Length: 156
Image 1 (spheres, rainbow, N blue to C red):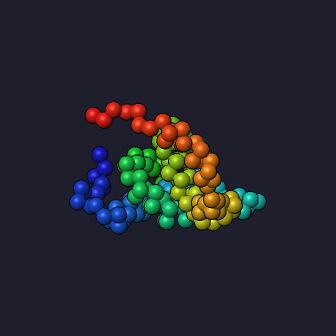
Image 2: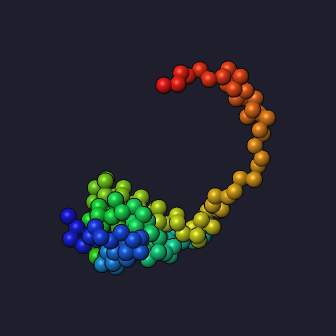
Image 3: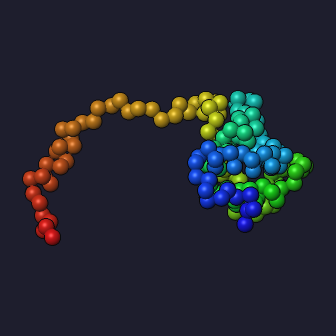
């Protein structure tokens, strides 16, 4: 059980976010090498590394606040990592086991894709309003037999 877990009285989003940021701050040395081991920069594609994409200080706190059901497991896995960057960071992360490795990958990658620079480099313009007008004649033709048939259920 996490002795640093917020009490049940912390209900506001800002309080939960502050708590997550405190836990991240206690584990910053581990996270600094871990996020870049998972997502290194690729200058040839114009892609930033996870740390360059503000994963640790901006996006990971948001993600962990929204998915507070994953916080304890995430931090338990991070706390098992060495504070100093190992020679092979990815191998060290995989040594945590499949479940913890998967959780770290999901949270870090999900946080990475929240960054605007990343989405711009990928050419992802986000969700946009649909401006097409639906063909109501086609829709009406589809439901006319049902309307014509009338009610077939018995009121109870």
